[in-house]
Image 1 (tube, rainbow, N blue to C red):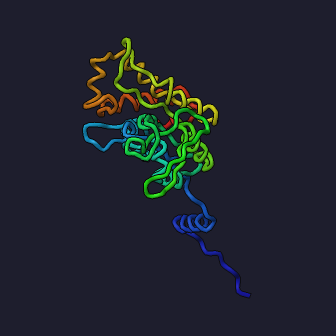
Image 2: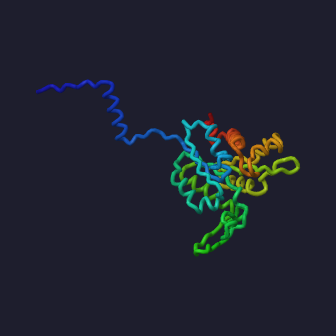
Image 3: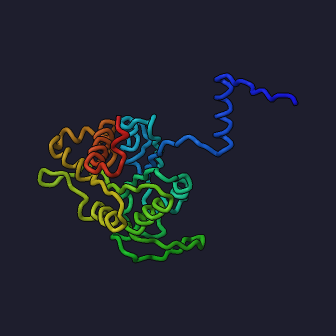
Amino acid sequence: MKKFSRRKLYPHQWFILIVLALTVAGFTLPQHPTLYIIGDSTVRNSNPSFMGWGTAIQDLLDTNRISVRNHAMAGRSTRTFLKEGRWDTVYSRLKPGDYLMMQFGHNEGSVPDTTKGGYRGVLRGIGEETKDLVWPDGTPETVHTYGWYIRHFIREAKSKGAIPVVLSMIPRNSWKDGKVVRADKDFGLWAKQVAEQEGAYFIDLNGITAARYDKMGPAQVKGLFPTDHTHTNPEGARINAESVLKGLKKQKRIGLYKFRK
């Protein structure tokens, strides 16, 4: 009987066999988490004179370890971000271990109706109240409270295994009695309340940046706002991005602070 002889495999041949075996077994390399950011023009702005903090924060994070996808869009409110299908795009891409940061509030203030001025408006508060509208083309729309929309984003992010982080809106260049006007009586408060109700993380971006503005003073802060009291230049965007990072440092359980540069 012919004796069977074992063929010797060289190191590079073993490597090829291992790679093939892992491929067949369905092995995949671990993916980096992605930070998705949604919001308005204070988060992402295409005007060269302005910059949103969602753009600036990419320079503060190690993008070799975490990807950053800024889906914020100028002029959007919680209502229109959902209505226009922008949230559907983000939701479809979320995967377990990803992060979702949301900051809204600057465009929600108008009374919701079918006029141009009311297109972005939401109902105030965090309750379940609704307002039914019918657009001129016959399309019906049910408008909800600000809190309802934030709650919707939180719950859907969690359903995909992502980690939602709610932020209060950045402060405007508005002063009263020598202090920057806070948003802790309306949208900032409602963002915090919903985050607490839903077990989501909350960063008081409004309060952190406002405290820094107070120290800087009105004259210096004015230089951060090129044309109005809402939109910052790149330097202002950097300040707000640093405020976000400061909030993350205070809440290391979120897990995002470890990705800083």
